[in-house]
Length: 149
Image (cartoon, rainbow, N blue to C red; front, side):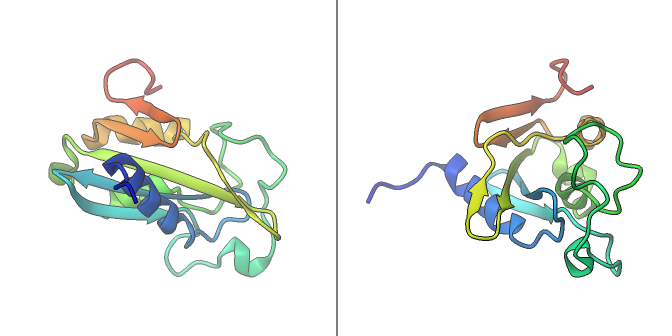
């Protein structure tokens, strides 16, 4: 058996983290890696101590467009935000975030390859010190290259 790449290894861990998501719409997980060490993980879901959408069995955004930038009716905290909240900025400077996600259709799990941070998370990433975000389709965000709007 061939040894997997570090990128696939880290994306696999991010996917495993996404399995803790409590969101009914899209399930995301991410990890922040610096110097080959995982410094934080995060998945999307209700704030700590809040009631999760998966427990309620309903989501106000279920039929709304993805990554619209308007999350005023969403009670969840994004995976990227939760990971950034778990690490200090000095530890995140120069790090890489790996982002993965899936959709659970009941009878099977479909891994997303098109995941990327929303506009709000991109602004937070720009301030965090993280250098880039990698998903299954490659680099989806880089600091200071114009796509962090």
